[in-house]
Image (cartoon, rainbow over all chains, first blue to last red; front, side, top):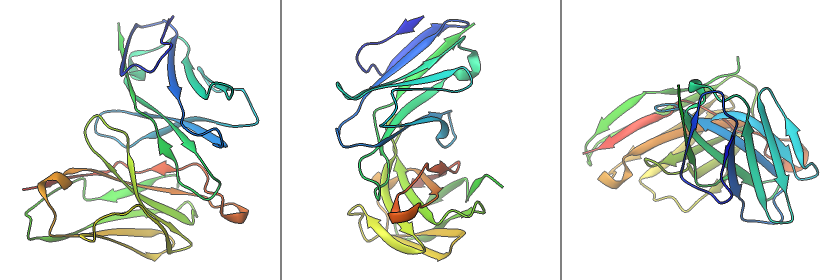
Length: 112
Length: 116
């Protein structure tokens, strides 16, 4: 599957490949992280979340990995489909009473 | 009901107009948010209401005036906007846990605002 080590604004994959989208977050005190998917003309849609006391969490076809040592978050999408084409944002919560801070998005393009 | 709704979907206004954006949720969430999103950029937080009280204002110009009439509704009143205020305005809501912890934010579809 395709993966990126550093944040890149775009990622192009073939249908059926596995995709890995990376995100570097800003604050070592952040305790909660979310991945959102935003399709054209729509609001961000919740995909999966993870707390800072975990390093991996799995959903349906998606897995989030958290590496606190290097402040890195990744989203893995298995068997990527054309419907997965969208902009993906990671978001972190720095303190319990604060709202989310969004990272730069990655545009995923899936070709058939 | 697991949806955040926003009206209108699109809005075009002149710099001297007054308009309002509306947001509604019936998930029992007691935190509601306004974000601004420019093209190809992440959402930027503008305001947060917790228990119908303004708890966070991210230094937003006074030409944007939020209002939370009740726990289900959130408005954003617009007056004397500038063309650079053209953007997608997103509303979100979330649960608040004990000690004020803000949980996962769920977003509406947004209002696409164009200021002429």
